[in-house]
Amino acid sequence: MGYVAVKGGTRAIEESLKRLQFERLQSGKVIEVEAISSGMRGLVDQVMSESSLYSEELAALAIKQAEGNPEEAVFLLRAYRSTLPRKHYSRTVHSAEMRVERRISASFKDIPGGQVLGASTDYSHRLLDFDLLEETTASATAWLEQYLGMEELDQEAFAQEGRFPKVLDYLRKEGLIADCSVDSTEPDDVTRTSLTFPATRSEKLQILTRGQTGAVTSLAYAVIRGYGMVHPTVGELRVGELPVYIDSPLTQNTDEDEAYYIGEIKVTEVEMLVPATVEKENGRKELELDFGYGLCYGQNETKAIAMSILDKSLEKGDKSIPTQNEEFVLFHIDSVESTGFISHLKMPHYVTFQAKLNDVRKTRKQSTEKEG
Image (tube, rainbow, N blue to C red):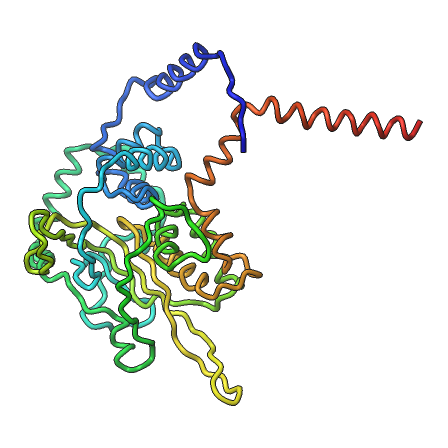
């Protein structure tokens, strides 16, 4: 699409930016980046996931600058991300090494290691807590001291013992779900090369985890409402910290024992069980279990579940069904692409619209002359 440069209006634009600053500051109060990072955990995690940049501080800064608008915050953070050099590539991260904070299964009541409810709004009443209007730093500190002082709560022991076996591994041992073969192919990078079709699995998963949370959730909802999938079940959902290692930048040694530990990232991982009917010999049909996969930054459970549903849906590849059409799904869930194109409609289209207007006038004139 081509655009004609619009000259002039520099002063008007400068005044518009001043007005934007005024709207943010007119109350006379400034929200600190640290307050956003600690008090808006869900929004911070969402912005990090959609930006493909793991930094709670920078995500909080983008949210502050965008005045809480997640699409604008993601745009800001992706733009910043594009300026960063890539100094290292981490070793393959194995989710079985996750230090789990929350772990549930909707498929089995009793799972090896037990269910860990952790922190979640799933068990709250969803009623407005008007006490928060009167909350102070002093009251928060007092609550924390009481909570952390409870004798039955041993945070240190839990942190050390927070590793659990994977639920799906037990189904594989029974032969009820297929084994996953190891694929050592180097993944494609959608931030460096344009997406092409048919997309590879690595490209699909990257686009899904970067996708706008609402869009990914809406399409996954469409899938289970009848667009290509029967009711799936969460085999395992886990939230926790994953250790990240890099090889030594000074030597060519790739021995795992010589890798450097550089920190942890919090992620949400979902393995979704999906029943599938498979046709066997002589037209005999048999019910089997398959699974979809989702993983994204932070505690972002709804998105990870939706991602796992779309992962499996896209695998079927029936283009007559929108939620199985990879081009339809992958091109439309990206927040920067979609909001950018919608927002560009506010930009000057003077020349193109005048051309359309002339066509309308010409057509109207020809119609009138014909009637006359």
